[in-house]
Image 1 (cartoon, rainbow, N blue to C red):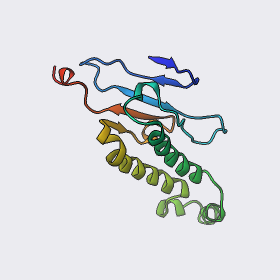
Image 2 (tube, rainbow, N blue to C red):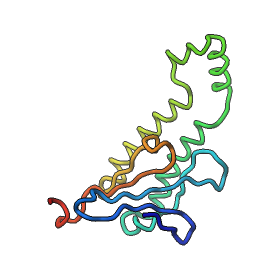
Image 3 (cartoon, rainbow, N blue to C red):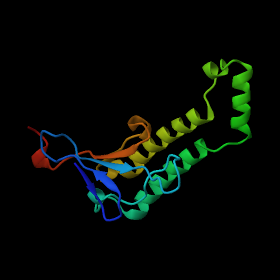
Image 4 (cartoon, one colour):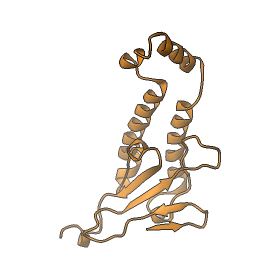
Length: 150
């Protein structure tokens, strides 16, 4: 079920019932600065009380920074492209691209944030790559004790 928030951000929250599994909150992409991979930094309404605005904003900004770097063009990415052309793209069999390296860094950052920020609050953030870079999924790990076993 999707619901618009006062900021215009669309949140999707799964219904909470013992049979439905964990509650999931989705943080949508932020297209206000173009088509680059960037996620909204406002705390979704479903997470109010679970995480502070500044902690949430910093965590999402770190992810946004990695994707911003991944999409930037520099000497290294131009050289990488030239090497690919010269080797008939066989270089990509042996080497990870700059973008792939940044995706791996983002995955490691999410795992580190889960241990440091999200899991102590009873939440878990999924790697945005798992959702096709469309959303960041945050789910509640443990429901109320009454909801745990069926």
